[in-house]
Length: 247
Ligand SMILES: C[S@@+](CC[C@H](N)C(=O)[O-])C[C@H]1O[C@@H](n2cnc3c(N)ncnc32)[C@H](O)[C@@H]1O
Image 1 (spheres, helix red, strand yellow):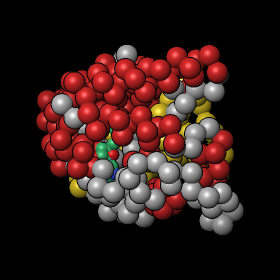
Image 2: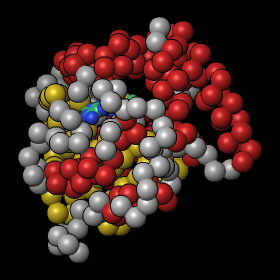
Image 3: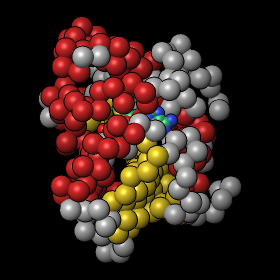
Image 4: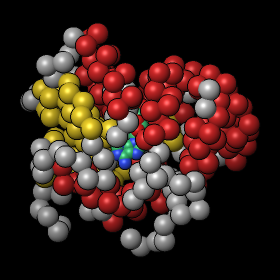
């Protein structure tokens, strides 16, 4: 790492998946309503990075209820296998139900697995994705290096994460919503106020934009890009595993 860890003063991420076990039943509804439906658009943006015209294998880390995988699958017939990993069994159970309802059990499988040391084999995926998950892991550089391990050389990593808008006027309005309205709404609907206070604290203390791109380059990705979405309240980061290791 070039810089000191900017997440060190943010809330503890130890066993954070247990919190997701508690809110799993309402997670999708809350995601959709608290993002005012925007998360659907953000998730669909990743489809651009799924190669066309050949069979593709996807690994989605911190997959939760498998929303990201299912949105990718919708627009991309090329996806041959899609494997999701998470530590929260309750989130995975909600995801498995959705997969059965959609009748895609043959292509989409969910497994228990840590994003910092995934059971996925070396060079087993053409695309590795993680949506709203990287902020939750205890050791981000380790997770980024593990994503590179899973990718084939030339494979693409797509990381979707909440971020803080750079424009000062937008940021003021956003922080008002994020600090004062979202934790209350999230707490009421989920019955777990801590979960949504955690969300707002981790987002505000997590590196975004160029600072996060630097972490990705340090992990060995090349062609790293950050694409802010909806005034920068979310950012899609992409990078490529070099064809030549050590390049
Ligand atoms: C905000 S949710 C995102 C879920 C899903 N990716 C989505 O887009 O809706 C964060 C997820 O990260 C999972 N998680 C937290 N720490 C993890 C870890 N170390 N390894 C794997 N999953 C983890 C949680 O259980 C939770 O399901």
